[in-house]
Image (cartoon, rainbow, N blue to C red; front, side):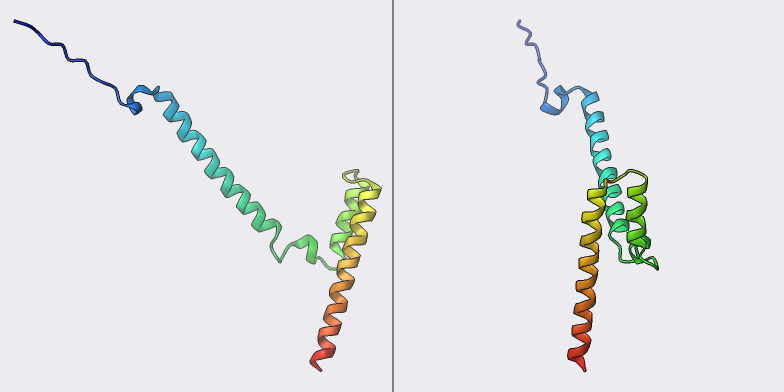
Length: 104
């Protein structure tokens, strides 16, 4: 009489260490939380009712000046950014004046 032995075969999922599944789940959770954080920050940063951009009295330029005073940006960066802001603002003002003239 012969006795056959049964050797179970492992599937791919069973052959992987269980800790890897935990690390994989943690990685997916971190990616998900990071994506939500990035989208929330972008939404708040680029919203139309941004306090810095719409503050009365040129809030954006005041904020830029504060960044220069505290050393966050150099004088060259300040001058370049300031001139860009002023050019864009004057272009928008000119466009709005032109639009209002054509509507009359």
